[in-house]
Length: 104
Image 1 (cartoon, rainbow, N blue to C red):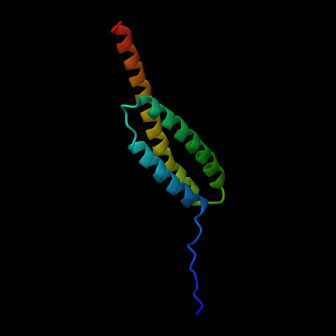
Image 2: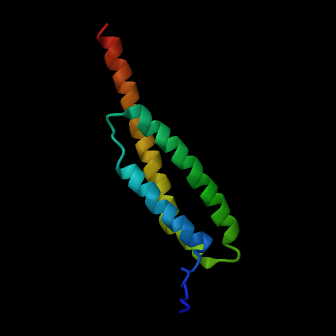
Image 3: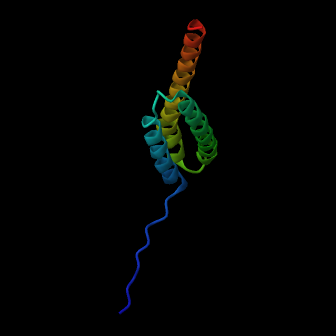
């Protein structure tokens, strides 16, 4: 008996980026703001990856309309969230530093 295997269709680059953005958002929402150092570290790494994606999607826009939609409607808000969390973590670090200075 011969069986046929059905292969899943390969994802396009845009679809791969959509999946990666979902994973990034999951990571961001699971960050513990009590661990400020790890929040800042995660934000720096994720922003670097998002910047790479932004550059590649900008080049892809010439041939794939979905790339522009992904960049403007999905990637930009994620980058804004990363920036917001980074700024919040940085401010918390400064507050902790000032508290330590005052407690001396």
